[in-house]
Amino acid sequence: MNELQDLVALIRANTPLIVIETPDEPRVVALFRQALGQAWRALWRWSITEGLCRLDLGGEQASGIAPDASSTLAAIRNAHQRGIYLLLDFHPYLQYATTQRMLRDILQRTDGQPHVIVMVGTKVELPDELEALATRFSPRLPDAQALQAIVADEAAHYAREHGGRRAEVNQDAATQIVRNLQGLSETDARRIARQLIFRDGALSHDDLPALAKLKFELLNKSGHLHYEYDTARFADVAGARRLKRWVEQRRRVFVEGDAPPGLDPPKGMLLLGVQGCGKSMLAKAIAGGLQVPLVRLDFGTLYDKYHGETEKNLRAALASTEQLAPCVLWIDEIEKGLSSDGGDADGGVSRRVLGFLLTWMAERKSRVFLVATANQIDALPAELLRKGRFDEIFFIDLPDADVRAELFRLHLIKRGLDAASFDLPALAQASDGFSGAEIEQVIVAALYAAHGVDMPVTDFTLRQELRATRPLSVVMHERVQALRDWAASRTVPAD
Image (cartoon, rainbow, N blue to C red):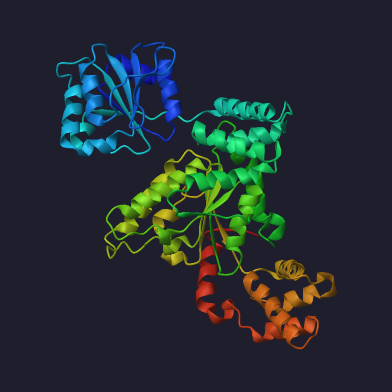
């Protein structure tokens, strides 16, 4: 059954109280107008500013009844014709005992017609006595066909506003825009489509980043997600050839959502590795490789001192992420947000958070690609590492000589230096045991040293900084080697 049939069934059953939580009031009114074709009733709308207005007689006819809650409920109770009453933002008035009692009398059909009362609001909280009598109805979000119609309608609106000059619409870009508008209400989708079209009179691939940003700002009401504006390209990342190939093989299935029979859409990966070896950069490059937005979940912002609030925050963040789909969800240093010792020092909050996250990972149907990064394998819960939680666990090891040479080349170019004037193989040989982050800092330190004596950076300057630096693989040799030994037979090398 579609939403209209569901609604008609509720009306025909004379459901006493229907609760609809949505900011999209015009769509609710339009839906009830449609329902009258299959289940006729007198249709009324109420707001505190306009009072009762009848909507089913070809227009809007004011009742002339005072708009206060008591007068409105008295009019409904005394009406001789059964009707549907859409009460917009009525629930705050239920804090008064008289109002609540009058409404209960109407719902329990005490000496009155079997009216259908509909409470509409962004968030409708009812007293327990009324909640027991209520049926909650959720309007479905517009599908791809409806979104296409919205985009076409806004393009036509642009032409009317600009003397018949039609908006330039790239059909491939429009298809991707419609795909990215899914998960939004009709009002929100229309608002974003209008903004994209009216900005420059066109819909093109250049609108996709702006669309992702607008959608994120609209949906991230919890504030626990961070939109990463600067994603990367795989060309910006040295090494990780196996990981790059893995992502590229799955890009089309993930983005287009049309996996062949027997092939599950990709769900995510865990990036484990030595600190400073590019896990964060790879997370950004994966989003760039998949050509979808990247959002980061900060576990630290989820935790709350009040019971149940932490889990609620996680649910809200993941729900927002699903509405942003298709996207990449990046959880950085996931081991810091999840407990693996099974203790109850935090009242079991970490275990409940882990349980909800694992359930979401296993059961989600949305196109959210999860990228989790971790540095300490012994701090990760065993449940998270079980096969099937992630599609793959990649290990980001210390770079070999070829990758170190490429890292020098990339970072020298990034700092405005001519990489061709440096002996990259020799620098790679001298930096054995260095991570990518440490190589970058060596170049930064060399730039400062050269600037201090008004001299250009040379191979000699870089080698001096290399000799003066003790990489993490030396300072924390035992811990780094233990991680590499563990990963050797348990993970897939990224390179």
